[in-house]
Image (cartoon, rainbow, N blue to C red; front, side):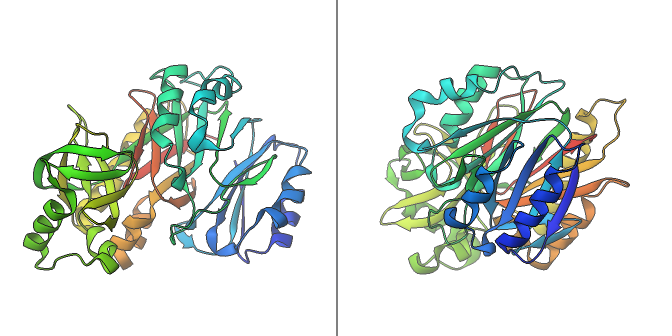
Length: 372
């Protein structure tokens, strides 16, 4: 991979870099990772994206990562040595019936030699449906890396891009014949629970143990922190106490409650009715240890005869908010000598390791390592 960082966030600067990268003979496709602070719009980007001769895909995120630094302004342009097979899915929240038809366009995905990137509008609330379809199509051996695009203001706007343009309520998938090692770890531990999710709808939890979800949650948080979450400032406290959906024999799937609506809690990502959840807590040290583990495991999953040349990090923006100044320490520890670090801060993280079911996570560090 060949990476260029543009730090002004200007459309004209991005257009210049894209033209330069596209002219390189060893670049067969391009991934664009942009910061939301750029203010990119379809009017500005679509004429550029639609005239690109090589396959292009990407998305807009709260921040991007390059060489251990986060940027809330600017764009990463990643030149790929293999041509990606790109599928753009528009109207994602209402296109469940057509997902299989879209996924057929990706062709075969060999888990040993191919990796799929998956970027989607985090507010489409369709990650689990898309991952179900992906798993049913390609099976557990397929490796996938990606996450939720969008803005921290949680206002839906165009944030997913390809040669077709820049769209809201969309996803883009790109299958690339590059092997990868992928791992995900979060470092959050049980504070209270389990609780039975007795009523929920997609990402909204209405009741826990047949009691109003907000009342149950607030009582636990008040006991643990000495402060009851206020609806107007709910996320300032709730980001320290996510839910964890229990899974047999493996790490919990974290769900981030970011908004209270009456008696209900709204999360980033679906919480199925009938599931068991714990309320979690964590420390900066436990999150740092988890990130170290993710890197170690990802490296172990790359074939032994390959050397890591690109470290791709998909990390949750709320981990950065929780860790504060110590988040720089997480990035400094996620390094491999001789390898370039690139990545994004997302609103939900996607990882399919080639060994189990692909998952949409919250508050999790996902690490991908590539030998190109």
